[in-house]
Length: 449
Image (cartoon, rainbow, N blue to C red):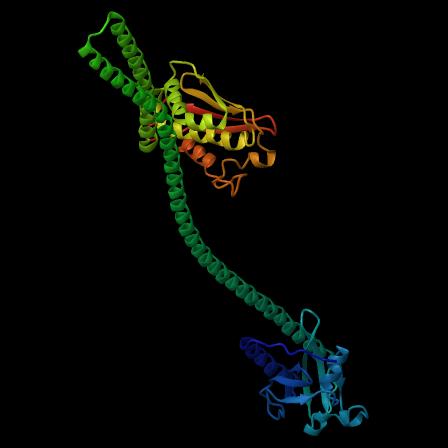
């Protein structure tokens, strides 16, 4: 049988030393012992301090040599040998060589029923121990085995404390790692916000650049017509001046006046158109670059925005219809509103009618009580799939990756609606049934917006 050594705290060894001393005195024997089994050995853990005791603490002996205690541990029963010299089975055991011819011992067991060793007394003369001594031996056994339970509980407590300490250290380490991770995430978030701000500014400047290019192209026609009319008037004036030296007829005079009237009319019409374009562009550009708050009429502001977007709208072949009641005023940020509408219209031009030569975009508005209004931008295009519907406002989400789509247009619109205009934006769509973006906006932006 193989046994496993179990360590005993010093305070219990000291307690058992006193018990063993008293036991040897009561039993009137030279040797009272508590033995501990080791792998392939047995050790004297406690030896009584009595006269004539041949055993010393920490002394070890090999197993499988016929020791009294070895039989007790194997049988787990009490063993009493009155005189080994008179017993053929025991007369050759190693303890006889120490003149220990009588023996009384019982096994000591851990709470898990594993053998710890024995408690025993030995004498150099014949002893037949009375029942009261045997009973006392069993009581001492119970006391020591009760100590085993305490030792085991203390071991478990130590283990629990060790596990708790390790858990606390692990939590502390995890907390430090979490704090470090949070710092890294905060740094990454700050970098991301900075990049996002730069991208938003870049997108905004790109929109203004497209607006400038579109209006410049649009101004070419009225300015060209004005130049042609001015040149024609100049030519007519030179010819009439030459005719004056020769003398002019009434018919020639009427012809000259008619030409002057036609040229002036064309010039005035062209310059008025140019002035309208410049005025619309100026207002939209100022609004979008400064994002200043002011009071404005919704229908007028949207008309100005559409004039500025006219070139790109006409180039697409689409038409934009307005259904904006007159007289709706707002005290808000027309620049932010213009940027939102520009992005929504541009989104429809790029995505809703991709590959189509014709189509409509309908902009509608209606009051929602005295304090709010609903503004919708609806198209009749290809619509948005259900899987993409919840992602259209996410930054960098685009279905035209690598085809000119930045994935920021609708994200910018979403941010402007929520942060500058202090409203909400929602989208409703299904494949092949177009998309409708609905803005719910306060007519008077909250203070501090």
